[in-house]
Image (cartoon, rainbow, N blue to C red; front, side, top):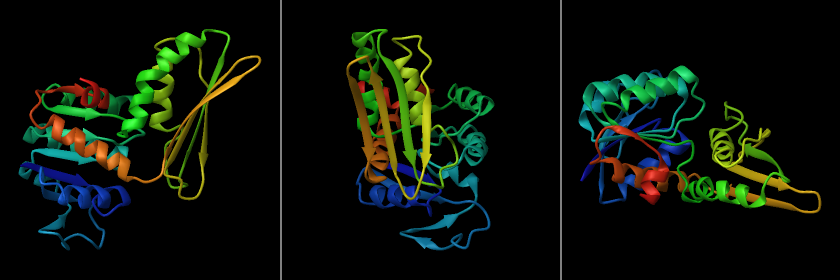
Length: 237
């Protein structure tokens, strides 16, 4: 059984991760972590209490983190200190923070992906081939939409979609961001020629699809050596 830690456990994503992991016989949730100062600290959550102490990382095998860049950066030191595996779905990192993720992956295994959904990761895989087949006569743009509370724009997923396409073409790919209401996550890649248009669209209807992918990644990485992995490794290798 994998001893699992979940950060931001009182947030929307954290709650779904906790609920789904608690009903999966592969996991025992042994750390429910939240930021200091919120009223939920010390309250019971299942068989454990919500904690604000990152030193609790020593209790786990794998930490799943979907928070914000600053909080995730602070946790990296504890993951490295206690040699624990990490599934990292946080977006909005700057270059220095990404370098820190790369550094700790030399001592612990890390699955780092801007999007844990299976469908989006299939898009990462097929879009380069689609771009090659269509060739240079097609212009490409990306439109992404998320809830109004999302801080980073364009989304990490949009950037990764553009990066995957640029494996096949050197084109600059404009990205457009929409922040409205409670949109979970929409991404549309538009290929436009002179007489036709192709749109490849992914819509997330619920955060559950991210939780499913993250827990799949947690199972996969639990016995892996140190290294920097992606959901492509989890799903296709």
